[in-house]
Length: 243
Image (cartoon, rainbow, N blue to C red):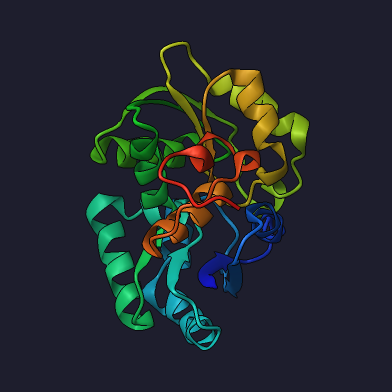
């Protein structure tokens, strides 16, 4: 059994994780511990507070008791707002507190794009423009080329969590540009696990979404590879463990 520990802020789209766990269909457990979201606002100061070491540390003991093999801060905006160096320090602090390999969704996106063997990406962000721009900066710091950006301008995770298939697909299509080799949807408050096959079929290219990438990053830390095509191109890379 491989146990992944996820620290997830508040309550928006956490039901994506049991869905993903079911689609993995193997000896993998995805444990979610909710951290205090503080003020629900896609605003830089609020996001930095949400990702503070004190708020993350509060959930670490529960994950250790659950027997997690790795821990991922399951929040994109609450990590990239610190910038590349600051986000690295955030996960180092988390790893020290947990005594486990640690990462965040933001680094998961960079690692997942590299896993796909591509470099040019388009981003469909639910965030306001200024926050979305910080994600683009983070990706560039990771060596990626951002060829297109579309921002939905949503201020709260609660509102993002109400989006369904039509809104998600509309955002992805709006973000996509011809030169992009993959499309990224970075908000863990966005329900996407049920829509990955549709998104990739509609765009005819890989689509990476926050909750999908978060679980993949946890598996990467735990040195596991799983073939689960329903979770998109990212979960069909070699080498694989058949399920």
